[in-house]
Each structure stands twice: as structure tokens, then as C-alpha cells.
Length: 153
Image 1 (cartoon, helix red, strand yellow):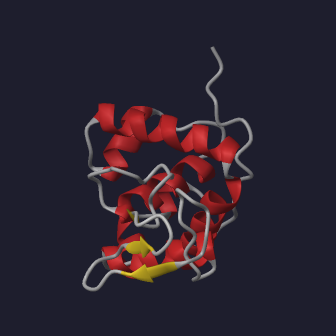
Image 2 (image 1 turned 45 degrees about the vertical axis):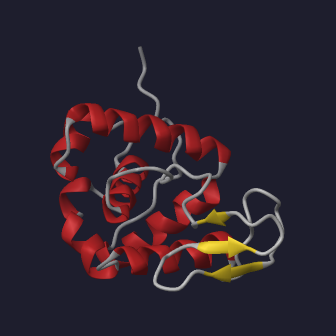
């Protein structure tokens, strides 16, 4: 998929709000059966009116973003999903300035996102590729395998 054929509005159509993004991440990460990131058990209750869960064993509160690149980010999950698609589908390399332009964020924010995505790519590929596949189904094109995403010096 070429970047020019892909746009942030497609992500917002597929995931109109944070709740839709959270439901999607829960399905991918936990198969709709939450696992506590602290004690690794499946004894959790959803917290009412929040997109979080409460562990009945260790009494911790957590969300689906805990322990991921999305954790403690102030950016909408839709922008993260778009950034993942851009990094995975941009061919060999996408510049920080280009990513910042497409996401409409500061270049330092884009750089930080790119570093987190690349680092996470080598630790947990399944989640990133699943996000890219869903976004790609809306925009058409092919999925890059994520090879050669580091710039050559």
C-alpha cells in the first residue's frame, strides 16, 4: 500500500472513538478475555463507565494499553494505528517529518512514535500486523513485512 492511497480519515471511519479502538485491541490482545498485566491471571471485572478492568486477585486496575506502546500516550489510538500502518507500509523507510505531516503532530512526537513502533515491532509483531491488516482492509493494497524499516547510515 502506498502512503498516498491511505489516509487518516479511513482509520477514523473504522475506529470512530476510543471505545472502538479499545474493543479492537482487547479482541486482538486478549481474545476478549482480559489478562492482568501484573499477576497474569484472567480474574478481572470490567469497571463501569471506563475502558478499564479490575483484577480480582491483585486488586490492580488496568487497560488494554497497559504494557504496550500505547500506554500513557496522550495521542488518540487512531493516530497510533495510522502511524503503525504508515511505518509498516512505507517501503524501506518513512522520515520523521513525513510521519509528522501525515499524523499532524510535532516532529519530536513523530520521532518518539516511530522509535516505539520499531522497537515494539521486534518484540510483538502480531499486534502491529493485526492493526495494519484491519486498516488495510479499508484502504486496499498490500502489507509490507516490516523488513528494512531501519534507515541505513
